[in-house]
Length: 156
Length: 156
DNA sequence: CTACATGCAAAGGGTTTGCACGACA
DNA sequence: TGTCGTGCAAACCCTTTGCATGTAG
Image (tube, rainbow over all chains, first blue to last red; front, side):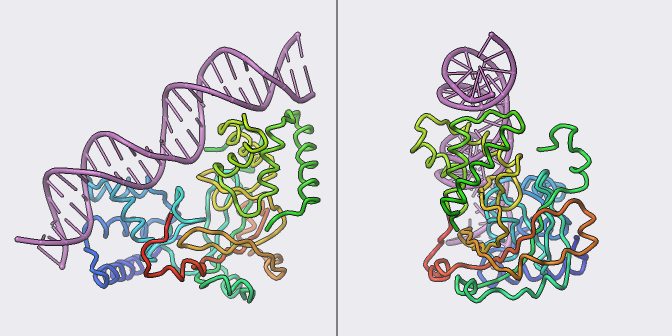
């Protein structure tokens, strides 16, 4: 579920704005790290983002990637799958979308589905805080893992 | 969202059945580790489960807790929040339920809501594998974190 | 009795932190 | 030019693994 080239450009502009507004410096590394997540389809983890960015910024360090991703999370420019922080996998797609997660191998597929975008949140839940995004998460076993059943562990 | 005492007993019986069926030994540790997750409300992580079990089985070791939780996942007796394995938080509540996750502090609240239990999965998604559970995940900011805004970081 | 499970300790990986150098504003 | 960001390396987790001992079946 890749963003288009134009969408990426928009998001980059938005990033620069956000940074300037808050007096946070616009560095080459921050731009490229964000670009890497925005361009990538899928839900890259830190390691994958690091490898991608290094192709364009060979001197970037792993801890800068960590620090930048946490910064982008705080700014609300990225989200994570599942609870934040812990071994996170990042997502720059802020359009409402939904997930199919394989409970064997953990692979996560995005999909769009209009009917899932308008779910009414129960009133008592509304009171727990400020609601920001509603996503449907379907857990199951992906085709690949189904084929592997009985052929030993496909984990990790 | 605690299970009742009776539900815990049922789940324990079910666990013993599952283990025996597969010729896996029913040990004191396995029973108590499962009980700990089943009894606990919330979504304990490994550390918390370890501390709880140690009150009743003081000699249990952390790696046994890890091994047992992975075993229980494989048997389908537990689930995790978000993708499996990575820094998992466990859930023994296999009834269909939904989550509100605070994107600041990561706190996760369960809720039941009948309308969310019967969502129709799009056909093209059905084809990706075997669908097992559909959950709605609402991300937002919890009351507590909203009150803390501007008072410095409330993270971690 | 035998195979499997456990506990211990050490190794392995991922993430965070402290500090001096370098780059944006 | 001053301040914030970066890179490096070491520290700090959390998780997994190897092996001898213990125990359920």
